[in-house]
Image (cartoon, rainbow, N blue to C red; front, top):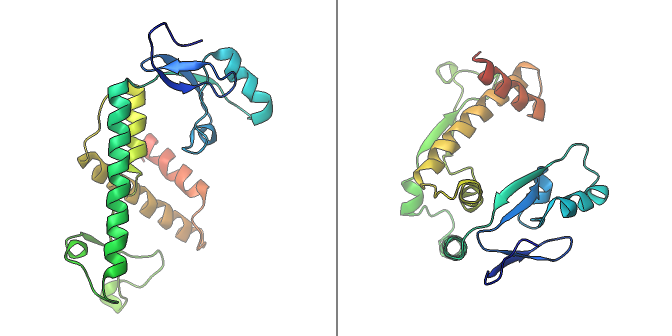
Length: 202
């Protein structure tokens, strides 16, 4: 069991149901599908982690030891997530209430970027570039939760735009790679090649 006398229960082990206290160590599976929000498998110890492997049928997996949040950190995360849901719901309500074709002031403040598809004619030759809204491409609450659980640190909101810009650049390079191969579908191998080239400094 991963809880001491006087500890408050954070969550229970998914296998043996033993309680895991706030701020206590526990284990997660290295496979991402076991760590999705709806799945969220946690294990009080290595025996419980190993017990889930036969059913999961992972080709390659290992246990990673992490620390549960403190009660204060957990309550702050729940409050933040609730606020983000409320903000998203309010935004959806505003969009639904807006007249058809109307552009809100908030939308007008968003930055725009020009995307030229591989093989398309340059704008100077008569082709038209498409402008798309530049938005945050990461799930803010999940990223903050990951950083908090792994390090106990908070993450600045300003980091989201930096990460999103990085993702956009990788996507653009992957799009170019797919275009060079004569495809209109960006595949996982396009991203693998781009990331490998970046690591190699190409």
